[in-house]
Image (tube, rainbow, N blue to C red; front, side, top):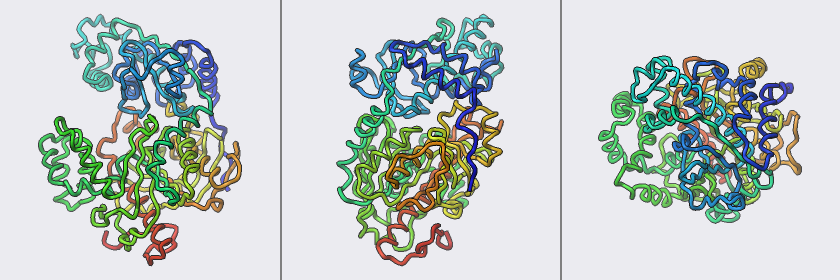
Length: 573
């Protein structure tokens, strides 16, 4: 049995966490500047240049991408858990503008002036947002100081900016982080020092639970009562694309759009894939292009067409249930049309699913501890959960971006538990769908509190213990899973075996979006773009096939998978 790994945080990270939670207990606004010293002392692996005089543009780009475009105008952030809390604080957020970020799904409202309201679904939102704000402010002010020292007067002069900030590549990264209004934002930088204030209206466990219950109450009417459920936490597009068939049925229209736009130079990549007989890659490019196709200017009817097509095949989407930005889908297995399903997930006997009573509830994976609250709400609302399958992004300490990792041990920083479980998925389930990436099973994963709340020394300790995967949701999901299986709350600071303790199946799989030990690839500087499609759809295909096989066995159908704990890919595919 695995021995208990080191305690949940390093001294530096622990000090940082205690600092901002202590300060946020204040009933008034707190200066972000009050967090800066602890932030610097933490020596976060995502902010390696925090203590340097030179701007850390990678950390600034990461932070800016997880904040809204209006951020340069913001001076005050208010964090709350419900509209009632904001109203009680005198903030009429119902009349404020909805704003979004590129790198986080977090409901935000902007008053059009200098105040931003952010909804928090769990403590993980605080652990995520505070370091992001602090890094943003630190780097904003360093960039400003360098521009002032270089006597920049024309922010459109890239040559002058390159001289001040360390070269053309640095300017390109900065402009990419600031978006299309980069000149206006740089002008703001010259004019104004960043001095943010933040206020936490409430952060109670009860309110997190109530928020999750509102979310489930919006989904429940779409779930037929008494039906068994397979729970999947993935993204909002993979299962719908694989099972609904819209993109494959409208291939010609999507390709015509793609040839008109050729964004990210995808047309030659698609043509090369077809010429090489790589139909998996070609289909993944279609799936990747579908979102842009749906939202092409002047074609507002396409989204409704996709939803209507999916609904006819038993796939119903619920966007932002309960005004919480965690989309959900309810998929009725009996309504799927086998001929429309992606060939990669068709298994022998799939046509017999018409006799199934089961549904899949797929949610767009929430952040950190929100996963615990959401799965708990689902479990309270349904009669039977037959399987829990988690697919998400992770950092890898021994692989490359795009690789797939399948773990059997997960240490959770939130509970400080080490969970041991039998993973229903293995490398053989995914590898047939992977041409470029590697699939690594029998791994050990660390569920971290936040991407910023880790440093190199801390990671080194876990790496020596064999932990090679770092992610944010699996631990909370397993804590909720424990409470579904056992008549008590999940423990803390224990080694917890779920190997033979559940009456539902567990499948947990991650694909690498970051390699924090590599200088070549990093979440800070590299978007997965369409390259992430191979691992995304490889993982989703394995999960769909697993669910189909389990359900066919329950229906008494002979299948090549029989009762094997792992799926096999039919010969010739």
